[in-house]
Amino acid sequence: MASQKIERLLLVLVVVAGLTKMSSGTTSSPLQYDYYNATCPGVEELVRTELVALFGNDSTLPAGLLRLHFHDCFAAGCDATIMLKSHNGTAQRDADPNSTVRGYEAIEAIKAKVEAACPLVVSCADIMAMAARDAVNYTMGPAYEVETGRRDGNVSRKDDALRFLPPADGNVSVLLDYFAVQNLTYKDMVVLSAAHTLGVAHCPSFSQRLYNYTGAGDVDPRLDAAYAANLTAACPAGNVATVQPLDPVSPYTFDLGYYQTVYNREALLASDAALLDDSLSFAYVQLMTKGSSLSIFFDDFAASMINMGRIGVRTGTDGEIRATCSIYVD
Image (cartoon, rainbow, N blue to C red; front, side):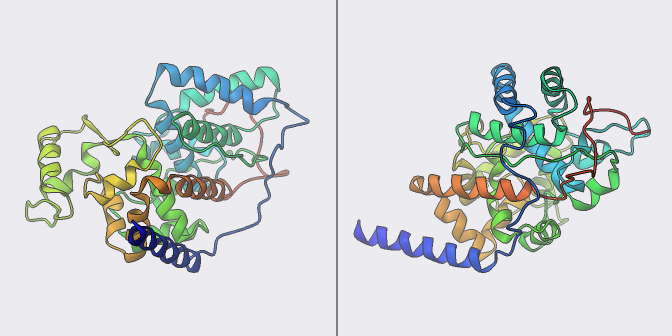
């Protein structure tokens, strides 16, 4: 027992030292906590109350809202431009990586409630950040404070989503490049990947790993053989409609199941499986397979979500506060 404790302590020290060495993200923020205390008091509780009602009717919505916030922030900053629509199919939401993103209607419904209470005060971007936080907490994840004060952008480009959203088949080096562009760190990358403890993936997003990994009709050798056989049965070649849980251990609970899935070589996406190919990310994954690491993960995830929520924010006179989030831009 003593040797196990020493081994775990050494692992923690190695991971912390390594991730700290590779961390260089922004520490300051133009945002602030309790930004709406004077102008729209109680708005966060209003958002939370509305969300709990929506979550009660749709257990898949928390994952959708968490992903919606991520995709918004990475494409052009956390400015709700993913919510904008285009008659010509040129907005962010029209890009292929956003084809299965959902939660737009939920954000719009909440925005309507907020507008009724505080017209043209609270941005769609801030509502999205609150919703992502509440989605995590509702599914038994950490409760953390959200910085607010964002304003909404009014330009939405498909190309931004295509250029800046990390690919589902990227290796660690590729993922790090995408995160570095956003001034996010190695640790942010490893930690935010665990948002995949919630949600599902459609078969096409991982079918190459089952049927043509190297172009020779083979299976990705990083996949557990028995699990690969189960996936092949569930996702016959050409199937585009079926979905599989990203975290089969506990798909509706925000916990360490994601890391256990990755460690067991049962990750659906190649980008998740890649965390085992790098020594530092492997060490973090291994550490997070231990139940006693839950509080470490929760603290890390909250910190990384705050970092992500600062990407490209518009404040002051930059941007707008609009009454409807999903307006047309053309």
